[in-house]
Length: 445
Image: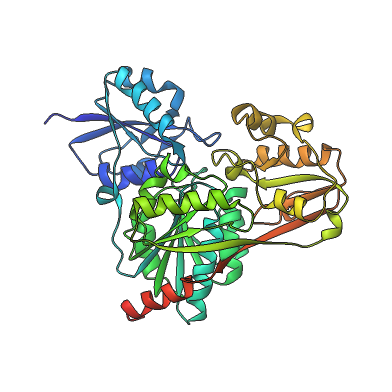
């Protein structure tokens, strides 16, 4: 039998899922390597044999994406599968050009090859870019379902940046579970809001195993909510697909992969942040939705901003710390912290770049357009230490924390700080409550 030698081009998420669902037990293919991008320090590992299966007793090596052309030649690769998200079409096809120039085929796997079917009704919450407000939408969906006395289990898009075998299936029911699983800042930002609201959340590496455990969760499961990451499409076949759009980045819904997949696939389109975006941008997003997916129900929503302590902002020279991925591969120039600074009268937003150290300084060399904001990077213990040192070195009066969790709980900040909170607030009709009532009736929940 002729085997195709395959490289999966990824970022520790979709790549592992594509392998597990399509390649793991497929004797027609031999996955010779993964490549890694976007996230620091996730290369130079191995996808372990415990997860790779019997065809891969030694596991599968993970290399930096920069070595892709060299790897294609060294491993005599027939095809490369692109498997990560939140990238422009220009970037996707530039990588495709590298692959083709090295002699291999370039491939994208779609929903029919990778989506798993659940025994429970599934609602997917996805987005057209990182930082659209997907997490606050997931939380709103879950709150509405729980208010109707339904047992909701959330399953989060993967973030396995540590020991892959140990992260195979993770269940989070308490804050202590975050420490138990050695969570990064990014993981805590996504898991903690679910835990504090009283619903169970799963994540990990093996998403079929995760799904089957979630369906039989000891606390009960009536509905599964897929809490997506970046702008990836769902790992599970949804019975109701919700996609969040960002009018601060109009047109991105047609120019980023796989955001346009979500646009074309969705049942419900939520245009978020209409309270801080301009009217022309909102109109443009609306027109793009109507042109590409006219059957989608369109909801408009505000991202309501509140702060713990306005006095820490008004008239102050402030450092704004925003959600890391939103600023890096999300490419946002404005977040909840910036909006709070503007609305509540900050004297100045202080540029943190002269004060950066270590891995935080490296972040600005990789992502050169972040500007005067500080991304809350904490993928490793060292990166978290460097974040703490950077914040404490900045010459400012106070710190605005625009991340989903309270950073002051996990690092020591030597100056006054205040948290920014943001929540989805729908405007007019249709709204999520109406749509979820129809979903509940349809599935006899």
